[in-house]
Image 1: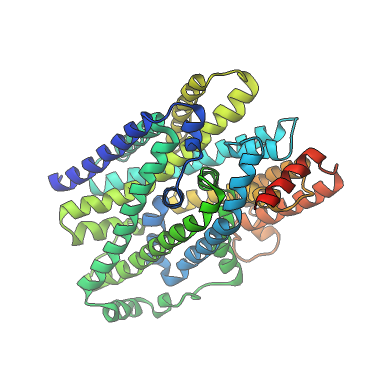
Image 2: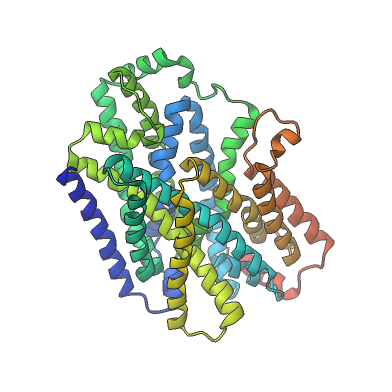
Length: 492
């Protein structure tokens, strides 16, 4: 085991723990722990949202898909870019204002309850359940990515790799809370982007330039250079549908809520989208150039999802390889930490405080929040321990769950005055149910499709229809609710 490589990773891990300790010293209240006191600058919010969004699938799942399928796999990146841009442009400033006006909501379930003055508490309960179910799977996907990384590169067992990853991530999340997660995200985001530029560029130079890459790929299969190869209308819609998921991802949109002011969303959008476009392009070209490199060298790869790791190990000095591996860890850890914190905040604020201890002190809530981080970590660890499937498959399932159940509710709650609590509840439940049942019952074939339609599409559509129909068929929102909506509109 190379001492240089290990040293680079250890330095990275220690730096994350130091940031966690630094944030811990500046976390004194429940609001600080869960939302950073709404004090994120545009740059921190943008990089934090990006890093927490792009988990291990960015450096493993996406390059692996391009390695196998060619440029046609880039449709996912196109869909994500479109969705992220719309999310920053329309949702970010409005949600930042709405969550403050609506009784200073600090969680998504809390926002739903306050937005619609839901005295039944059903919105808070069901949205918390959705968060727990899908985030447990999402966190597990990150643990799988970490386990695979340590197993393939450092020679550790898959299970030992998970323990190392989980131990460090939990440590800085547990004590530093939202500030630690956000500040580490900034560092992790920069490491990820640099590595995603470095690996494909150096591989390209090593091969002799773009012409050599194109020649090698054409020799394998010329159609891999065509973005439409093997694509049908259903396939393109499914890939683009990934963009719909952004509107409902709690670990991303909570960064909007934490902005210092709603006006900061514009600057954050420019920073965040620049980071995202460079990073996604790097991941796509890593897969394609990696395919050409392996063909040129006459090599084979056992697992295409490790192409980023393998190129780093082959082409760079161990110190740089350690930096590249740290970038993968950064992608994994930034997402896991954000998801753990959002789920913990939901269990603490939306369940414990709301139903068991309304008079709980800030100190008590912070302690409960930390215990919730441990609980969710344990649940996700059980799933990851058996390595249930491909990283990208696990991420796509959880992404669809949030996109279909929360996305339509977030969007329509921000822009439709007539929407009510009954409609919101119908949207959350119907979206989640469609995602849970779509693949299980093979509903794509039931409706006559020749290939699988990504479950976020039907889930999103059904949720929108249920919100609209149920809201119109039930009671008109009270003056209390419409006054809040009008105040937000006035401030926007």
